[in-house]
Image (cartoon, rainbow, N blue to C red; front, side, top):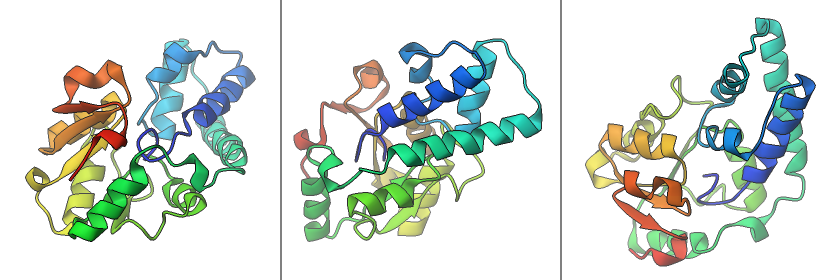
Length: 200
C-alpha cells in the first residue's frame, strides 16, 4: 500500500524521527530506508540495534504506541488527492476486467488509510499487519491475500516499493513488480516508475 497506492513515507519518517529523538538516538534517511515495508515492532528493533541500544519491554511497547499516535495524527489531512499516479486507472481497469485486487500491507493502519483515501471498498480483500503473525520479508501477508481470493501465487502479481516486499513476494512464488524505487529494480521481475506505466 504505502509507496504504491499512497505515499505516507514522510509521515513514517517524521514519526520515527520523533521516537529516536525521545531516545537521543541517531536517525536519518539512510536508517529510514531499512524500515520500508517492515512492521512497527521490527522497525523499532532495527533503530535500537543500529544505535547499539536496548530498552525495557514496557518502554518498547510504550514507544510503539507513541509512534502510531504521531503517525495517525500526521495523517489528518490525507484524502483522495494523495493517491499516487496511475492507481485509480489500474483499479478501474481491474474491476472492468474482473481482475481481483488485494492489499497486502505490513501496516496496522491500512484500513484507516484506505478509508481516508476513499478506497476502502475498492479492494476485494485487505490483509494487513493485524492479520498476520510474520512481517515481510515473510510472504504470509501475500499468501493470505491470494488464499482469500482463491488464487495461487503463480497467478498473482505483487506491486512493491520496498526490498522486504519484493523479497516476500518472490519467496511466496508471486511475480514481483517494483514501483518507484530504483534501489530494488534488480530484485524484481519488472520495474515501473509509477503505476501509470502499467496496463492489464
